[in-house]
Image (cartoon, rainbow, N blue to C red; front, side, top):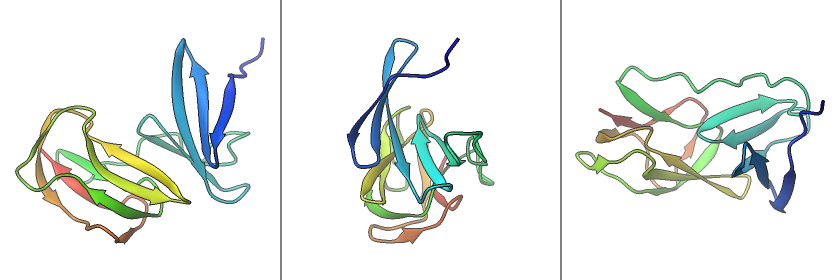
Length: 133
């Protein structure tokens, strides 16, 4: 029995994957042997043809909810400000990595407590970008 999923390359570093009757978009960046894949709010890193080095969600910061940078990236757009109410799935920040746009979405209904980045800033993995409560 094969575990292969139908995958279609739709752009450089962007793939469409059919999974359990759904179509998902997966973004991939980085050099061979140390790839970063961004899918469904999760980051996988490593040799993606074998076992990932990390298949977990990024660790949460010290606040009830934090949006963290999933990989080295540049902040393209900050779409919220402190005090703003967001709904689950709302795009909060748009990052760019390896010429791909990576939208970071609110994990649940919340209020923005603080924004710790600005447009044009280069951010590193696991850095808290937005605090939500």
